[in-house]
Image (cartoon, rainbow, N blue to C red):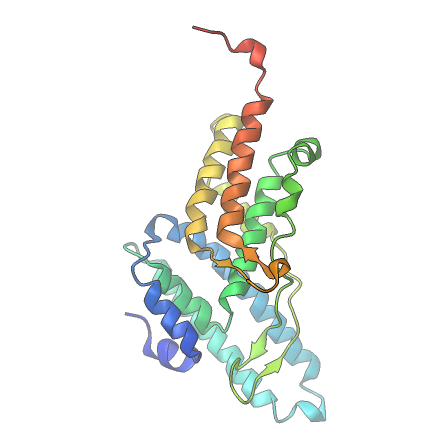
Length: 248
């Protein structure tokens, strides 16, 4: 069971509570240990942003009414992160509901997490291929999927909501998490194959966002990453020297 303070006091949006029910039977046990440091990275960057917002404004008169809410928010974030680490450090069965319980409790919308992880996965894959390969197979088309990060709010979806602005995210730490999960005692070709398989596994936590009225707002995070991985697999076949492959 998750901490009651988190499930009752930190998740306020009815839509998020309904989403959690839908995710209750989606098994992420296989990738939970890999997701843990990536989610911690996202939490840390978001927390540091709010802490900086607080430090910059705490001496302003106009901030006095908001200051107690922000300070309470900061305490909540520290508590949620602590409980997330505690829960995901335990071995055993984990679900997508477990994951998003802490993401929602951290007051991060689902699309925010999708945007972050999507960018981590794309940038991670880019590290394994030079610009010539990337351009030749038009893989750059997958770089611009998604929207800019929405603002982080204090007490989102309540009467006291206020924006703290958007975070300028860095993906280096999370990219290292993925890279370090792959053995360095194998060939480059095997390492890339393993990474493609790992990224395919991670897509289970990504969601698609489609807009029937405005196609340019479509953000199919799950499908786009799968398409990118498939395109890379096909492109690698084209790169093999055909003259060395004999009929047997």
